[in-house]
Length: 224
Image (cartoon, rainbow, N blue to C red; front, side, top):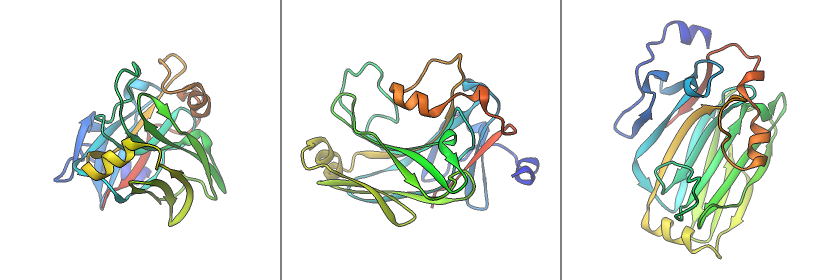
């Protein structure tokens, strides 16, 4: 990564299939990988987001990711029909399927990854899955297998979680309408920043203030 950083012109990752949503200067494509930087211990200077130019529904949707390390930073892959936003007002329904890969939950030989399904108005169905490797050490493939009746979270071909979605008409609706957009992002929080998500999420994330890794932090996405 230091060699990549030294020789890289950080100048956007948009192409025919992906659009940079903000902070394009923190992203660069090299050798088929989109690299994203968290520049410093500041939420405003950490990461960026990309969104697909295509919509998806039922099927298998995957992303190969090397997550950013340490407390306070999260590397994400998710599907949403809400513009990629977390509606803190909880005033309108949306569907979202999440992988939230927290550097704070990674260690050699084992990592916990936050998975979630949003339906209705802020109805969360979150669960950690435990993976037998350090998610920040190498690339791994994270997939959603979505049908009108179920959502499965599959990593490197192994199913770690399956949700029975037969009781959630929202899932049936978005899979049939193909109204989900794919999103990938890196973002971070310090102790001084406003928190994001429910208390369990915030506690698991930690804060950038205590991240002892050299900055900038870097995450990689092989978008296919």
